[in-house]
Length: 124
Image (tube, rainbow, N blue to C red; front, top):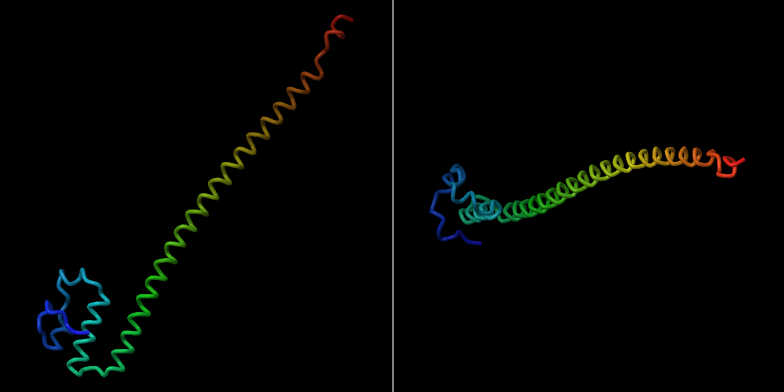
């Protein structure tokens, strides 16, 4: 790959020691590194084998960043699902307790009604 025409000509020490400008920081960091590696290769400061190794490391780094991002997203969704399940369990426990109290109330009402004297008992 070659140096983009918009890139100013710099000596190798300038490109290594100069911080990227605000406008170039919006570019893809891997693209900037690839361009820097190209410059080093063109100026014979690094052998091709080193450049290939560095490019392989850059690709692996990009892959690992993507995996890391996916794992963070998965972890966030898992934590949310766990919180939701906990809240649902608490609500179901409260509902269960409420239904238990209602059951006791109805059983007591049935018992009161069952023990009430019938019309025949009242007429006798």
